[in-house]
Image (tube, rainbow, N blue to C red; front, side, top):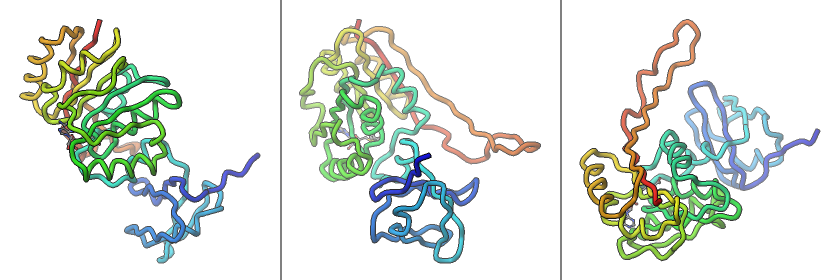
Length: 256
Ligand SMILES: C[S@@+](CC[C@H](N)C(=O)[O-])C[C@H]1O[C@@H](n2cnc3c(N)ncnc32)[C@H](O)[C@@H]1O
């Protein structure tokens, strides 16, 4: 059996209990602060995954490997982001897989662009547009620490000024006014390609639907993903009392 040890630059999950865990990237010389004390991340390097470590106040944490979705939690957030419940559906609805070419806007924190990039690897590409320089720079850093930058072409550009790419498998718009872009986006899709817009309000859905009529795109669907988590306690099984109650609507359409 090979021993899988923690290396610098890798992401780890620090598990405290069923209610609290942390996700952090291992950097030499960096001290990570938790509500259960702090830990010098250098001390994790070389330990086997699954090891138990102690914070400076003697609290125990299990160090585990991460999934991609865990790593998103460890990123610096500067905008509203797309949540996993919507990311999963968007990926399937957009038909994204290895080799896909996808345009996305706006980049924001980079959750959606990074997730798309993770699934189009190793031969596909995500072209992501962000109008604000400060968000663009933070997203670049987020892509780098996630290891997805090689599969992304980031553009610090207003997508309303034009989409530079052609022959796209999908365009995914997570920006306040997708209706200003749908005609251009539709013209850039391959046959069978999908256009998706994600918006938080029904008035934005209406405007997007009106604009879609001008594009000739078909198979239009409006979807809201409702997810309810339960407290996993035998004998006390019931929905959790707190959680995200609304994210947004997913409008999808196809070029036939
Ligand atoms: C809700 S955030 C996107 C969040 C991102 N999809 C994520 O999952 O992290 C919307 C972003 O769109 C950007 N934006 C708004 N209008 C834009 C435009 N016309 N072109 C490019 N980016 C735009 C905003 O600056 C903002 O960063």
